[in-house]
Image (cartoon, rainbow, N blue to C red):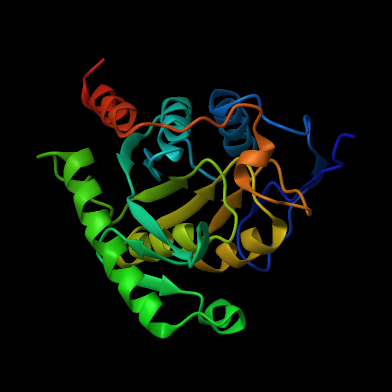
Length: 243
């Protein structure tokens, strides 16, 4: 049986602002390429990026990078990565209880930690482990190329989907601290409650597919194969090569 999915509020300029109510054109995306095209269309349709402004499109590796690259080409921006790592629950590393951003800052969902009953020592140790991994990944992916400056830029933060929102939350706060002029969240799929929360740490949220019964990001793709770090590095090199 096909899941019935509401496509709600494709954009929200602020936590108080409303949006249009529409319905999903498809229950699932074929793959990230399909999601990228539909997300880019939604961004243009929502009008959240001034056509006279050259935005900075920040993809969250690894799965967000191929989508960010398509969005970047469509809206005419500069591409860079925004590296963060989720802090997974004990025995379930995909279930985020928090996240670490590239600058080493961490966002912990303390209410969730308390509700599940996770030991604070585990939280401290796993947070430190992910800080080390973020540093390693940033050095590997960026190489000797410095991050594109964020200060004063309109930033479009792109991932291939959002579940609890912990990783994206940490990333958005980093972008805010770096002095972005405006922050736009753009993801192909995410649950409405998470998107409402992210609207509190951003200026606009664009998400074409917002199922109430969410399950996991990969459930909304026919093909959700992993993206390699090599593919991320290659996409960044391509973006830096003058056309």
